[in-house]
Amino acid sequence: MAIPKILLYYVFTPLSDPDAIRLWQRDLCESLNLRGRILISKDGINGTVGGELNSVKRYLRKTREYAAFKNMDVKWSEGTALDEGGASLDFPKLSVKVRDEIVSFGAPGELKVDATGVVGGGTHLSPQQVNELVADRGDDVVFFDGRNAFEAEIGHFKNAVVPDVDTTRDFVDVLDSGAYDHLKDKPVVTYCTGGIRCEVLSSLMRNRGFSEVYQIDGGIVRYGEQFGDDGLWEGSLYVFDKRMKLEFSENAAVIGACAVCGATTSHMQNCTEPSCRTQLVVCDAHAASGPLCVVHQGEDSRHSS
Image (cartoon, rainbow, N blue to C red; front, side, top):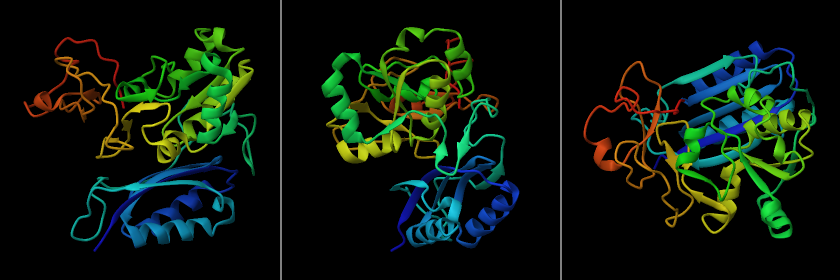
């Protein structure tokens, strides 16, 4: 029986010919009937691909044969389904592109990367070390969400600081505004889905005088894999594919509120207006009631993909 799987991965490493990597990765994915999204820059590679288990395993093995990608960080999760040809239904197509940044903070000149990864980033903590830090330092520890604000509406670390940002590019302005200068002398644990955004965010924070900055090794995904819903995480994890969200156990807290009626829910969907790229937290009843766009209903929405 074919088993659908999704692979989330990244590595920061200098690449001399990103376009050659793009062509190789495109051909490799096409030969294995994989779909997903891969971004490549001079600083590394960031991807999410889905397909039949054996095909995804072969993709990972072949990609890691390239010396620069040998130690890339990977996370596995369950896909929902495959089509008759074995392609993942969690992604509409395969996209492999070269960009200035593999995470779009809008500060490509500020990021420094060598063969060991990001230079000057936050200290990596394992999920267990995160819990130990909180046990040792208590309420002094600040969890700092490195995602777009809408992602935190259905799940976040307890008592986390969630900056009001619509896109990753907004973080530079938020940090430069001084809004979080009061945290510069506190232990700050940055977190994001799989860890890649915090590689950059933590370095930006250190460049701006935050003295004690950490990042969770493997991000929320790896923390949830180890502790499920028995740790410091609460709620569901938003993901950028057709699944929309993941839960780490059957005991996941439901903390989202429907954008229409305020009912408690963890359901998310795309805005149905073609020109709108809004992501909405919507209860099952309103999700099933037809086209929905809170922006066009006069609501104040800061959601954005």
